[in-house]
Length: 248
Ligand code: DC
Image 1: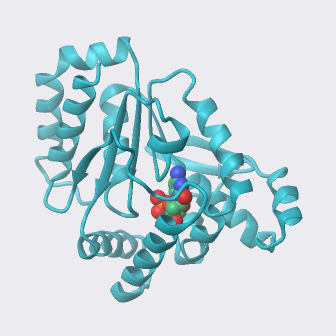
Image 2 (image 1 turned 180 degrees about the vertical axis):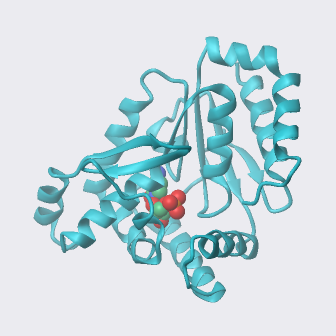
């Protein structure tokens, strides 16, 4: 998502207007669970919310992508239960702030750029549908939330990882808008995939994520819906912050 020149001004105003509530959310930290389809702005909103509230942001999609990269590089056969179980024993996923970027580490190596390309994107849904992988990562995610003060985004955060989260948000946007955003993001990084390839990959992942047996992408009954198709980045932050304030 592009930052328009008035973004920081907008954010500053939101922080100024909501200062007292933001202090309350810092003193009495909560868990904010953000779920939704691929490329509808979950990570951007989660990052913005976390930075305004001084909470930790965890992009759980990056964790599934890191495991996918490890499986691809290690030529793990996803159909072999034993290979999956053995391989997970040697996988450690962490996050580290490097410069102004929150980077994903796989066994200590920064793999942030590798996990965003089509090689991983094409395989991640199959890996994320594996119950051993899900159990392995969900356990780590639940540990990360013990201290609260966390914004976690993914597909099953409000339904499986933190069913008691104080605030659950379900984000969505039209497939055209999502593909366009992803296309621009990839182009900026120098990737060569065309729009149609990206749109097809998004539609394919939506299908697998929503129809898999283990923890399919579902809106928790008590999740608030944000459709980002026509919302600016500031609009989304303002909306979500108001929801967080209402939740305490
Ligand atoms: O958000 P993303 O596109 O980086 O997610 C990558 C894949 O991981 C996507 O196909 C859905 C899956 N995923 C999941 O199954 N559960 C999560 N909590 C997060 C992501």
